[in-house]
Image 1 (cartoon, rainbow, N blue to C red):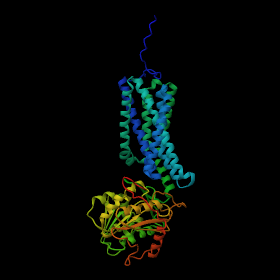
Image 2 (image 1 turned 60 degrees about the horizontal axis):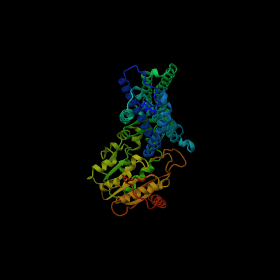
Image 3 (image 1 turned 180 degrees about the horizontal axis):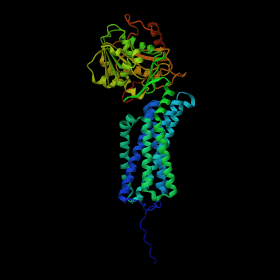
Image 4 (image 1 turned 90 degrees about the vertical axis):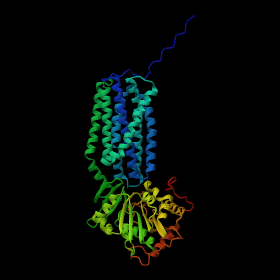
Length: 545
């Protein structure tokens, strides 16, 4: 009787290329690989956050941009892991090549995205989609490369010292997630405020290239042929040279791109803790323009039309105490102070730098009539929603909401039922609230959602609009300048606590440049014809914009 053969003892997987020939002890080598995982994970998350932040700034709607970037990258990471399975026989060389390409693509992604937006973003047609197409392309490419890292790093760790799969995965993911934490915190608190998005991405790419190159060429150099080592070294030096050259010229690039976006007469350009602030014009007879995060918020050509319509209908009644939410440029306050009987104006502005420019910049201060020199004007630097919530005892005759459109994600909470409920609490019994609610004709659904939200907060409303808007005055998410489809009107809603507000102008008020009572009522009737009925209110937990 022939005895059956005993089963062969389990051996290493067929893909295992044998133990790595390291210049250091295995324990030290394993630590260095995990340190490389940590650095590469931090760089990978910086690339993700940089794409989300820049896309939100350039394109608008941060929720959509974050969803696109993260979903595409996670999908691509899965594909990258599958593709990398074919490289496990050459894990060291494959990982080195991937990190080199990732450093170049990730490091230059912000530069390329900003450049495409600056020079093609206003063209319309296919070119108008350039930033969006490039955003998805970079998200896909970076996700593929990040996903390809994991199987190769697992192979390298196992080649240093074999261990059970569960333990190896736990160690790898621990280093990866801690690195992601550091990268996620470094981006908003270190890279963005100190270096900016462009330089921050370039330096992250350089760190990525150094980490990958040092790990492979230093620790696993014996696994590579002499030719492979030279190629990898040359590729890394080339990428580092490209990133260094880009960093050296990033200021020139940013100035050229800024001129492409804003025109040649940029006078002030600064990045505050809140937003990018740009002032153009104001000299040689050119009207001053104020851009916040790329959106034209003040146009010297027609800002009087907007601010007269925003302020004066609300001043038709008692107006001793006035609260302005936003309006740090001082232009709404200028119109308020034209009315006799105003005793106090409180401005709640999120960005202190906007207020400083409105005080000190000659062109902007001249436009607002030096309102900040008036002792009746008081400024609070705070988020408008938080300010309303924390000061429930103040009472105002008029509250003016001079804020960006609700189509901008950061502003959505300021157009919520909860925010209007807080504003209602601040009004006197016969007080009035006026809200800038975006254009009526081109964004009817958004405008009438604001109106429904005000009514849901217990306020009576009187919607109205003003036509003849400069197409370059893009206060909302539309960044176009001079495009034929840009909004041509401003929409406003006057609201009161008691019975329906009377839409008109104060008989004892100042003489206005463009607004008349007859035109005000005529445009209000035209806006009413565009009413969208049956819209639900927007709330903090269910935004409708």
